[in-house]
Length: 198
Image (spheres, rainbow, N blue to C red):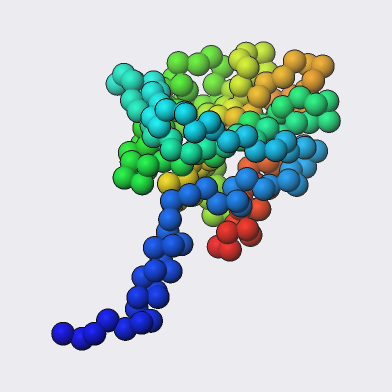
């Protein structure tokens, strides 16, 4: 039996450290969104339940959440256009959480008014795949779009794009909203790719 080399042990320790499930600062320090001001990240209270229930076409299902942050991005009228959430799943539940969140989005898309498409919208920016739903009208709902991204290591990124009263809007039409939606996701994922080094 060959002795285990020091370099092998160092490699194992390095991998175990880099693969640790945690929310890296890169997810929280995006400050350069066009025409938006990022507020400070707000961390979930330590007392927050580590599972939450969401709807699906097959009834209630659970998603784990052992840590999380929220960052609001306000427009020039001081109204929050983007509500960004970054949450961390339990390591053993991440794949199931992804499945359950997509089922939840399908449920919401099927049971909400004025949706842009019958199927979930699939976007890709800077190598990241994003799935979600979006409305086709500014006249319905408090949220115009809800999207999720699963970049790995237990992380889920949620993008919520708020509908705003006309006097507080930074968009002039549904097409303008979509343009700003895609611009934000594109800028965020470009920041993430550069920050994470891949």
